[in-house]
Length: 557
Image 1 (cartoon, one colour):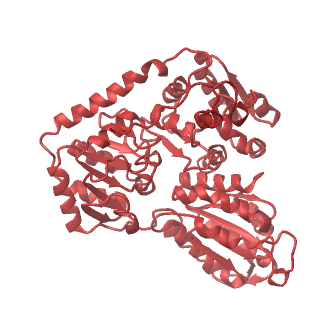
Image 2 (image 1 turned 90 degrees about the horizontal axis):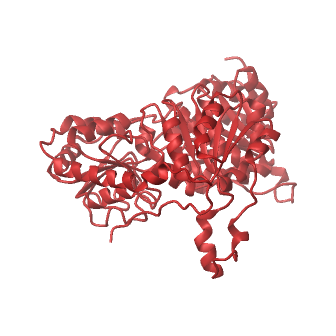
Image 3 (image 1 turned 90 degrees about the vertical axis):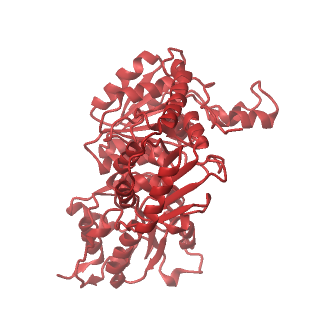
């Protein structure tokens, strides 16, 4: 291998691992960015470090491999904050930062702050790169850590304010790329046969079992296996938001999304089950609505690649460590079809049909201002068979989780794990990973305000996403809390949750994007079709009802 600069070596390694785009805020590894251009890697220059982290997160989830986000020393704290969502969603983002040389430390150097500790809570590997000779080893280790076990972010902190350790020094090292760690899961741990047999027997014996699919199913690519097991044994499937679309939501065995951002019928079905099989689920506060669904004491089986998660919140009668896809394949082989679960499956259909009947009027509403439920139905009916739909958190997660249906195996739903404002930049990252697929972002005006400036980034780089804004000119999810705190229902707290009525379509046009304003529900579908056909990024600004509140989670009495 010929000698090369550290910058060139980094670029060559990223290309070797299949990286097609990096997301950065200047200036960091500037020489490496120049070398990346020569190798065909896109350099997406963002307006904020958090947006760069969210773009890398969206890229990683769609590419099913690491995403790269970079910032210099003073921006490192912002980048660390942006990794929170990737950490919570088990997404393999590799964060790269620079730091001052040692002789500058402890002397009040400009922009000096010890930012490495900020990465400890949001990464599984957090390392200093102190010499050019460490670059080959630590870059390979970053990819290993990011893609093995439960995927999660990692951080490399290069010496030099902009990582200029890698600048002039020559590196005489073989370019070694470990292809196993370019995608996740890097390994598929097989379950213990005895535990699979035990689980198969326990499922067969139950009268009202339910599968709860979590983000581990999505990470493992085990959606088809979930459906095969469910159909073989007549078991309904509820999903976390991270696993929405695991089973087509028009399948008779689909219960919907369970937990806090959920459908009532899904919570009812899981609450009535006599056995819950958690597959790739951390059984966290959202999917269980703070450990109320299922009820504590409900018998459970838990399958997870991370043994530390098994039994954490629901003691498991059968605990199986293994990759979701590999474990479900063994379970499908081990179980015999159950002769009769007709009473249970009929009960599931009754509960799902009751939910559909309850919301049918709102889903088809012709009201003006527009009801969000109608917007969701229009998106369901419009969504292309290969579309990627990304949703913000809060009401956006509630509306999309419950009201938009993923009905085709080729459709992908990605959700924000908690950081409002994530969806728009994450959609840009998703589009960079899959430029030939339609990418639609669903956010509210409150979420869109966070990273509005990235419209210019989208226009500059031709990142042609469709951003649908549920524009109720407010944070109306906070309305009750603020009004209760103020003790008034007559404008007393409006300044805390109501915004100015902004025409985001006009804002988008001023930044070089396309914009469409929709105030009539009959014009939603034409606007979506126009947006998808447009040459450039598009904002579809839908004026919705400020008084429309997403349904609260059902909890059994």
